[in-house]
Length: 216
Ligand code: ATP
Ligand code: MG
Image (cartoon, rainbow, N blue to C red; front, side, top):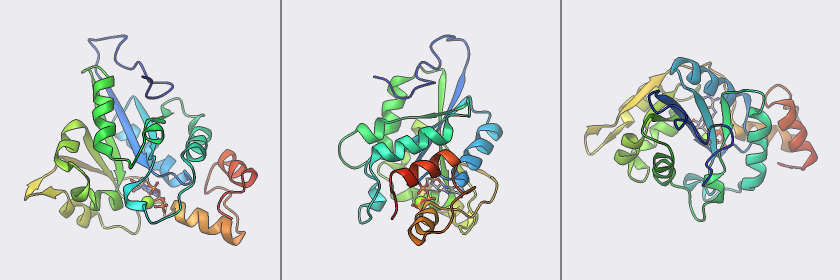
């Protein structure tokens, strides 16, 4: 089964080489420049060969919220990332039925890629603060190396204190990225109020939001 477009066969061509594949999970409702700038810095700093944006099908921490369809969130991720040769998008979580659990995704990716592909899971400080509550948190951090990015408004110290399960520290690396105080919630609120979102999302994503009448 195909997991992404550009990097689906990573690792197979040269078994003697090792590859570093970043997985960037989120809701991406919509994807914004905070996501893009952060992912690009992580790619560079962690020497990743690729970063795959992975929109969640049914995000378990947002069950009480209205979320845009997976197809539309995927489409926006594709539009936003297409110009970066290191970026890719995966639809495996959107295609999977039921709530989205990251450990299922990482298991699937681990089974898909050969052993010379190392997996890295990328998340912002706010997400890392909740990591101890994710299903199978310990197994998760063994399936992939976790990279926690700084995010304005969220304490890095709190994130560092949060990466424990049963008193045991989870394997998480902390990395500083450009501090862009932008969220998808903010983008949605701007559209709802009729305020501009130019330069906060890519032009292609902005056009998509407008032509599909999202967030009104
Ligand atoms: P929402 O407001 O709807 O929650 P969001 O901007 O937080 O949207 P998500 O899709 O929830 O976006 O986040 C996906 C991942 O990207 C999370 O790990 C989150 O921490 C990270 N992230 C989002 N925005 C930023 C940002 N400006 N800087 C660093 N990391 C970010
Ligand atoms: Mg969020």
